[in-house]
Amino acid sequence: MSLPVDTNRDELFRWADQLPSPLWDDVAERPSAHAAAMVGGRWEAGVFKVPLLGLTYLLDPSLRTIHRAGEPDHRVSYQSGVVLLTALAKSRGVPPSGRMVTPLELQGGTLFFTGAHSLPLEPLARRFGNAPEALVRRAEQMGGEPIDGADCAVRILGLPFVPLYVLLWTADEEFGARAVIGIDDRALFHLDLAGVFALTNVMVGHLAQTP
Image 1 (cartoon, rainbow, N blue to C red):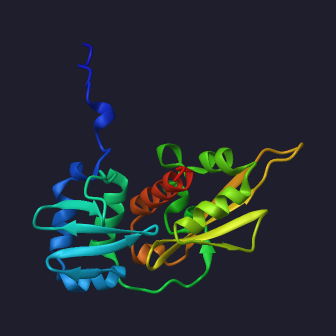
Image 2 (cartoon, rainbow, N blue to C red):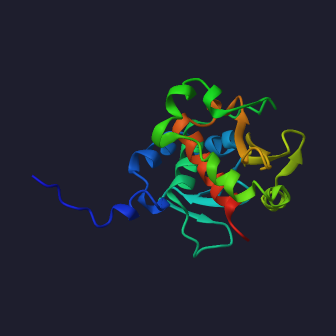
């Protein structure tokens, strides 16, 4: 028997207004002001205000909506919503150690970050492999900064307590470009592995945009 084709499959899991209710329910189990403080955000007038990759997001738990501050018509992505709600539900407010690891080095990461959960390294290498200065410029536009490492490296705050890193080796006549994504080794105090995966995808998507 052939299965029916879901003509809306490309629209599934694309936008924050499609987030499942249990993610919002998890946030509701914590005192709101405490949840905001643990993630490095604010709780004001019934709304969470949480920085993510250089932008501030407004989360209204009563309406279960997520918007970018100052951009009411911008439709927030599903993965951004996953990061924000997971952090509000889980974060323990632990400051970063400043020690970078790859997501695969996090507990359980070797098994998790494979197959469909492979890290989005190729888009970084393709986009910036011949233009490392563009990576630095875009990272700075997101509130990040260049650091020492590889041929080019940047640090960007994913969440207030979760810095992300991109290390880039540029292409030459012998080798193609290569990228590595790093994250603070205390990331799992704030996100689960699925949240880390979503955060890396959102970062790469923002970096690849032309503002």
